[in-house]
Structures are given as C-alpha cells and as structure tokens.
Image 1 (tube, one colour):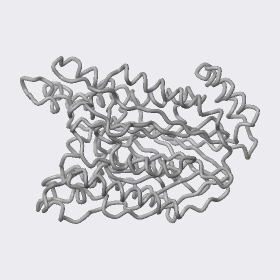
Image 2: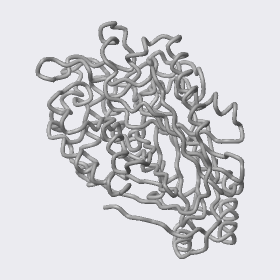
Image 3: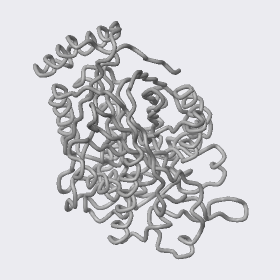
Amino acid sequence: MVSRDALGPVPESRRRFLEQMLKAGVATALAPALVRAAATAESAGDLHLATFRCDVTPPAGHSLCGGWIKPAAAVDDPLEAIGLVLLGAGAPIVICAVDWTGLLNDAHLDWRSALAAAAGTVPDRVAVHCVHQHNAPLVCPEAARLVAEQRDLPAVYDRDFHRRCLDAVQAAVVAALPRARPVTAVAQGKARIDGVASNRRVARDAAGRIAVMRGSSCKDPALAALPEGLVDPWLRTVAFYSGTEKIAACHYYATHPMSYYGDGRVSSDFCGLARKRRQAEEPGCTQLYFTGCAGNIAAGKYNDGTPAARGRLTERIYGGLVAAAATLRPAPLRKIEWRTAAVELPPNPALGPGALRELMDPRREPAPALRMRPAFKLALLDRCARRVPFALSALHLDGVALLHLPAEPFVEYQLFAQEVRPGRDVAVAAYGDGGPWYLPTRAEYPAGGYEVDFAFCAPEAEALLRGAIAGLLG
C-alpha cells in the first residue's frame, strides 16, 4: 500500500515552537501532537533544512560485520551517521546514512523511531540507510539473541554501544534543528564513473548457473578479465541550496563499497574516504553518500584487495563526486511530496527453522561464521511470522525523486526504477532495513550462487517490490 503526503509546510511560528520544544528536551512526548498539527498547515514557502552528524565508530574489540570477521583492533578513519531534516512540508522528514554494514529488522526500526522522536515526526517519515562497509558494525537484535545462546560464539554487536549511538544521533538532531536554514532551490546532477562497478555474477557454466562469484576484490586474472557485466555506471547527486549556497549534497552510486576488510581496521573504505575528501573541500555543505542497488555489484574487476587499489577506487569515486557537482543547476523548489509503501515479503521456502538451528550446533558445523549466519535467517523468519512489513519511501522534489529501498537489491531494481520515470533520473538508496539480506530478481534464483544462497526472501518478492517501486515513483 502506497500513501502520499503532499502537505503544506509548517508555519514559521510552529517551526519555532518545535525548535523550542526540542531544546527543552520534550520532543518525544509531543511528537504525535506536533505531527497532527503539521498535517493541517497549508501555508507555503517556508521549507527549512537542518543537517546533523555524529560519530558511530565502534570501540576496540567490538564485532565487525556481525562477528564473523576479525573484531575492531584499530581505526583507520572514523565512522559517521550523517543526515538531514526537512522542515516545512508537513511533519518533518529525516534521511540518514550510516557507515555501518547493516541495520536489520528491529534495529532498523529502533533507528527510525529514535530519529523520529528527536525530530518531532513519525517513523514512516524517516529513511535510514547503511553504506555497507564491512569493517564496521552490523546490528540485528534477534540474531544476536540466538547467537548468544551459543556461548562459544562471538557477539553480533554490543547493546550498550548501540544504545550510545542512538543517544548520540538523537542529540545531534536536537542540536541541529535550531540551526535549520531556508531551502530555496534544489539541483540534480550526475557523472559516469568507470573502473569501479562490475557485476559479481558473470562466471556461469553452460547451464547458466553461477560457477564462481567475482567478489568485492578479485586476485584471479581470468575472473578479472571477464566482462564488466550489467551495472549502473552513473553517480547521481541531489543538492539543496539556501540562496546561492549549497548546504547539503546527497550522492548515490551502486556498488559494494569494500576494497578489503577482515583485518580489524575500522574504515569507511573508498566511498567514505571520497565523501570525506569532498566534505573537507566544501565544509559548508553536508555531504551524504548512499549505496544504491548493489546486491550483485562490486569493484572486483578493478580491485585486487590491496591498499593501492583502495586509493585508486577512492580517487575514481571522488572524481565522480566532483564531476557530478559540476553539472548541478539549481532551480526553485516549489513542491515536496513524501510517499511510503509497507510491503510484506515472503520468506524463502528453502529456509527451514529446524535445519537452520541444526546448522548452529557446533557438532554439525565447527566454523563460527557458518554457525552464526543461520541466526540472521531465523531472525527474518521470526519477522515474517510476526507480519512486520518493510518500509519503502520516496521523496519527490519537483521533478527529482529519491527512492529508499531495503536490503541488498540487485541492480535490476535500480534500472527498473529509472524506467518508471523515463527521461528523469531517480536517485536510489538501498541498504535500508537489511533483514532480507540479498534481494535477487526472480530469474536469478535458478542460477544459484552466493547471493541466492543468502536471499532470505522468496522469488515472489520481486513482483511485490516492483509494484511498490512503481507506486512510489509513478
């Protein structure tokens, strides 16, 4: 079901009242009343934008990527949660990017709820996305509970650290709202990036099945020599302006963002490093980076997993950010529309809870990583049994559309989203609620491979997702 919200902005007096209440620390209690009041506003021309950021770097010893790689031993560069709040288009709208591997199921709702409470809105008007670096935390409460039953396994994540991060991001939002600035214009631009994205599923046998995956990095010359395959080579940027000043820029590109990982060295990796370089060049403009539909896309063709390769990939992403910025042409912003869709995705019938629990038994499988992953599949089954839908949303800014999707969809979903709006670019942020892990297309299930093995939803999910995307963008 898709809902539309093209409400008028909150008047100046009510915006100031909201800011005062947030300063006083009572946003959580007043949020429902403020949302109801905002829904009745009809005045125009008072859109404001506030940006926020906070550190979410894990401490030494914290699990990375859910606990099946080496835990945090050093920090090469810090991890951040960065976002924006739009005020004046009905209830506030919050969009946030987090330098983590993933937020799954209840953890994703925890973030949306925390940001909503801080901004004085509702979770349905909050989009939270992970960039999906792997030397970073992955949070799933139900999986963590199941893993904790196996006392010899490492923790999926630390609850106290996660709670501190939620407190920090809430405080960052509350501090940012009084500094909200008028938004007078928006611009979209794009640039082609070569030598980064490549399809992981290009090595197939005579029957069309995946023979071997070309991963995030590839040291096999024969695999690297295979064609790039289906990708979306365009980096897209959507920027907000206050007068002539660019105050926020959201960047979107579809590739797994890892050059190498598993060494315990926390890093935002090449996409985060490029974003930080751009931030240093434009300190007055908050830079946000979102990973698009990259379930079957990575840098493997162009990445041998060395520090030198990380440098090259960083340079190419940075070059795309600069080139896309050069194409921005601000135009007055007249209308904002927020659409949401709640979608229940059916679980993969291949996932039997009894068999999954057996795989966690050390007598059956000694490898810790292989014993931990079934817990994430069980968490998805629990969610489906409770009929908790996945939240999709789209922000329409005149002719610009920002689409927010869950999990790791294949790039075909991103290309489909752009087909829904021919002649107009759609900027896609994936890696929202990571509960399903991979979201292949139905046609790819018979081909097998890693992504299908870890697709927790059934092939029927494609039709449901395409229908929701069409409704959000059509």
